[in-house]
Image (cartoon, rainbow, N blue to C red; front, side, top):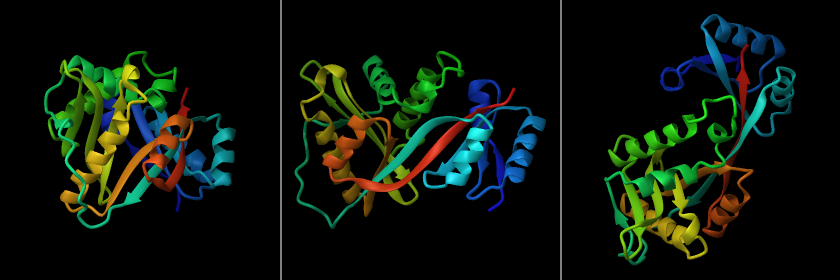
Length: 239
């Protein structure tokens, strides 16, 4: 497939400058140069470049253009069987209410994200982005349910948002408060997400994380997920 440029209106409005994405499987050097020229002409300042992790030619071209490897993105998935006799975890409750603690959990969920790690982005952009993601989940725009596990005082110890992507039930945000880790909060949230997804008729559940977030990868594998797809995402800043 030839390199194709996709201009990202939402990202451009959010960051306040032009953002585009290069879509390509096996690009040639000429195709990449043409795509980047199109981005410059359109006023794009930041270009996302997605490439399958095994595409060595694309990675070599990205390095030649001084693109920064921002994310080794991994999609984990698991098959969901017929309706299981999994008991409802009564301590886990759905919510549509934004609280400061939920916002803090959303920020914690993205500590390894490319938007947190790219120091050329505005300093507060990462938190604003994840706050918006949380709000759009709570209001139902991008999630079908938001699950929380509060303690006896009502403070949320964990957060999980569940939506749909590519026909699969999709975990968007998942975080456990730093002070509550090691108490099976995450596993209880994932188990309840599985139960909810099966009840909603889904046959697969997926979640995306970063390969460099080793604790998250190990956690998902311990929950029964397996790698479904992996790609590298580069950030290429145009001068």
